[in-house]
Length: 256
Image 1 (cartoon, one colour):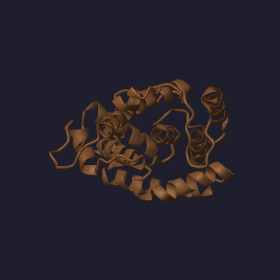
Image 2 (image 1 turned 135 degrees about the vertical axis):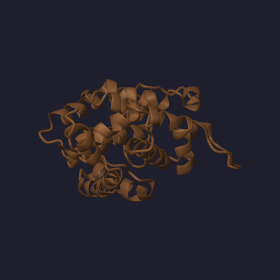
Image 3 (image 1 turned 60 degrees about the horizontal axis):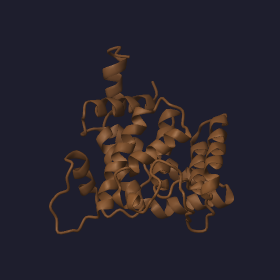
Image 4 (image 1 turned 90 degrees about the vertical axis):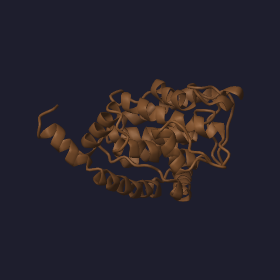
């Protein structure tokens, strides 16, 4: 029995049972809140939880942005699609499907003519990073995934390199960070690596380490940061008794 086996079983079982009180609910809320917050979402953790658990936002004098709500719901759907397709190999089609789940309900993006579930049609820029031109995205994504699948060892440094290269390509008009972070969570879970959630509170550390990885191909700081987030997420899994539940319900009872 491995830790990720137990975690995946809990995530899938709780989702199937619509149980939002365990590690599935915690992961959905925490990942969606932080990943969207990094990109500028105005929704707080309580609002995110209410949206996930009840489907509506609590009364408040604050003004909600429709896009923030739509993208939060989209992130919940993207996570569910990630779980549903965990047995598949990472592919361009799957990455596009993640983007579609995230963005299909976002009116502003559709009104702006953004490609939804498909690669960008217009150039985009991120700081001092030269992202791929639209006509080059397909080729560069194919090369990236070919490199990834040929990697002898799928370890945390491989995942960090995949993320840095993916964000450098920036294949979509918008939503690259969120799709990139869900890919990392998925590939860790799939390859027996402790997954993690990039916390908005650590955004500066994350972005600085990511830029170093992209400009210098030095993944040391990025891996070190991811390791700290692994420890934090594993601690939460322990609080939810992930391994104990798996052992009790699957191994001891023979429910394979």
